[in-house]
Length: 131
Image (tube, rainbow, N blue to C red; front, top):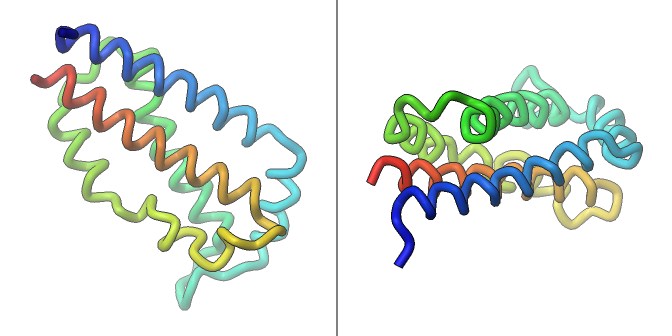
């Protein structure tokens, strides 16, 4: 049976693998092209673009990825876990419901799915280190 520390290391490695994929997609020309197109798309009735929403969410999750991978240990894993659980805003329904099946925005949809996966692994990592 794995100890909590071993489980934490496993989830840390999963976060690292997802982070590598996120960075690769973020740097791709296909992603950049799709994001430029989304600059024109307003988010519902709000004064923000879909691109702005995605960039904001990426900055948010990237901060937690950094804590898991490079921080001096997560100081308040229960608080982080709760914060991530309350941010259902990462769901595709919020960000890309009407883009996810579009051939035009497959790279962006994949990017959002990777952020959701990172979020889930960070929650699991927090569980492992706080148990």
